Length: 476
Image 1 (cartoon, rainbow, N blue to C red):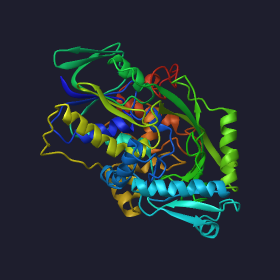
Image 2: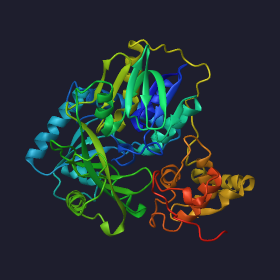
Image 3: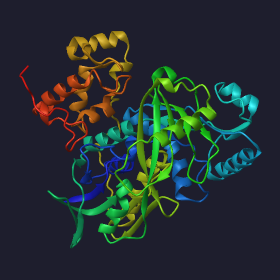
């Protein structure tokens, strides 16, 4: 019997698990995929928004600002890369200027610190590669960037280090109730828990319906992106937004914490909750609008494109409530959900306490976690000392990103353990460089097979039937 079962191992579920792991509770995280961070978390803009965009008085506004203020400390504790690079919302005409003035006033009401409206000269001095047609911009110095899946892996790993359990490939198909607890069923197993937290992303309306709550609907919102090589990462320093429309903040141009340049996303509502295909039309829109903002973007140096689905709720706000005793929704967490996630976790914890969950602090709780990228950031002398102890750190596997065998093996031995190629990618960045795994994938397959004690034919790209090798034709 678990005290709390959290459905969904994205950034929201992960941060909730970490928040609750500080207390004497038996916690279980249920994830329908083969790994954590497999939904919106693995394919979004990686922005810690300042908090000026959301409607005053909304949960989005309050939790965005609270979460943004907490994020630097959370990232530091979890060993996650975080960069307070600031953001600019650029305008081209008087209509944009009026909209930016409204954003400034809204941001001030929301409690965002340091907002300023800049004129053309100051904007172009700050970001010389912007279009010369820019006339003004809203500057938010508290804007930041982070790696969302790295944050999620670290948060769930930290929760597991403090006693939480993770059940993968557990797709909740039914929810029953018996006496003082719930029973969550999958096709192969069941879990009993006194409390349930629904953090299932685009599927959160379906999970809520299993518990008898049909008060909201989630529509997947497609967002397509193009990622450029690291040599393009310095083209802009701030995250560059266009003056927003009703559907979002438009096509952004932003550096990433790993040094690449990211452009996107589109915003198209769809019905299929599994459709993450990129389209020629979508990618053309990304390129067209990004170049309008930053004309010198060298799209010939693109290394990949991808699509993510945001969980757009029909209420216009985050849906964080308790429709029935012991059942908490953390649904409709679209942008700025990543930014708000530490504050969402605190709010969910408080809701559970109001429902009767006893929160007794652990005496041995450890909020700290070593960085997954520790080796590559050490000095040459430190690297040599590590290699002396473990020669696997001296063997480069991913040449594009400089990732070693030692780092890959260490990742496989650290909770939550990667079980497939994409899991290695999210933890180490191996396969994320220019060749996108063209050279290193076979070597990683072999390492995974050895560490997991599985035949190499059983290793997948991303779980399920995504096997990389149909049959071994000869022994090594």
